[in-house]
Length: 285
Length: 291
Image 1 (tube, chains in turn green, cyan):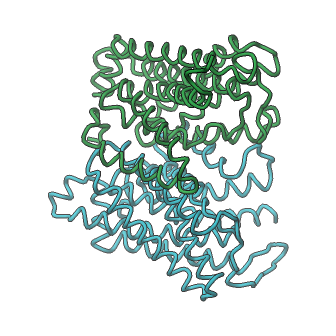
Image 2 (tube, helix red, strand yellow; image 1 turned 135 degrees about the vertical axis):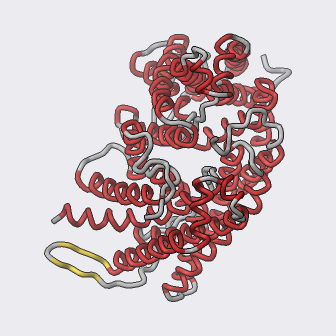
């Protein structure tokens, strides 16, 4: 294996695939159901820690830890979903931001989760640390199922309910939409997908700590959803690939990588403004 | 006595948080966006102040003026170059643009200022002891400047045309336009004032914790958001209550209870619990009503 594709490219594909899974989770929450989340990375972190603990403490194999991580992620999604029933828009943005900061802080502060060192020596997804081709296939397989799930959701009754909710929450609930259920569903589904992504990640690098997913990851995922939102699912996936490749090529600029990256984020927002199809109202009516 | 000591420390820090958060509140009021580059303005203010004090050995008031001026100029640049071209679009777009500015600025600042954590020369070494309480000259200075700036802002909001226009736009933008308020001009002034306050807050934070480092803006900006939202997003009075409560809470918790998370995360834990109990914040959605 690996005459036609070297391990650098494979790692890149895996990284992009894992990021895409994260972005898809956020796309369900922000893109489909219109709820802002600035703490999305915390779900990836929950999934990664769950898988790492289940694997190192209980000895569960990856094929069990990854789905369990998804369930645990869904539970955390539900947990963050509850504030979304109480607060909206900008308030929700800051509450989710807080969630995204408190979770890593709690993980760092607790000896059970390995403190700042995190958890290492997690079993690899495929036997041996170098069998990247099979691992890439598994990641792409999970990504493909997530894409199909989101694609089906978008065209389902649930997708329609979410769209009605975005257009006018009050009108939707007057028509019999259970707004609370719809919001909680979006948060738990989105969180579950991202947690699975996090679990895959931890079985890919065999290590996790509280810096694995940070606020920057949340914002990058959000940028991908915002940039891609105009052409829906396709756009989000495109944005993931473009942004990740860009980030990779910026390695050449070494010291000024983050400067350029910030500038690019800013410029892309300037360019994308006219195409965002569903504006969240800037001035609440 | 120790309670009192922690209380005093908490109140002084709370005052600085208020200073930092008020700029954000004012900007949210007129622009209705979460201004994520506000933390960067705080860090740049701290950098300017630190440079003036330690590298150029300037007197304290020069450092303070420089901090405010550099903060204000940066705030204006951000408004002009990053936010205004976006027009009235989705707030998410503005938010990501703001984060882009923050990432870029912080990286540049790290290159300019070097990444270490450095002490900042105290402008005064006076210390008072009284029945077991200790108050340093720096604390008094920080408190005096905070109070002065807050009173000046209160006067501005209540008695000047600009302040009234800011409140009017926050209350109802369309109606203010119809009443002849020049919205763009007010937005520029708001950024100018809010960012100058942030610059001053940067220097005061650096003094209070005796440290300047280029990434201090991240935690500062996040904490400011926690304060603003706890205060009810857009309410000046609420911001003041929330800032004081947070300062007190932090100092007392750190001093007394062993909390398993670092100081900077307490703000958000408090915020989440608080919002679940009282979703509207300390003060309901009103923007500094007269009276």
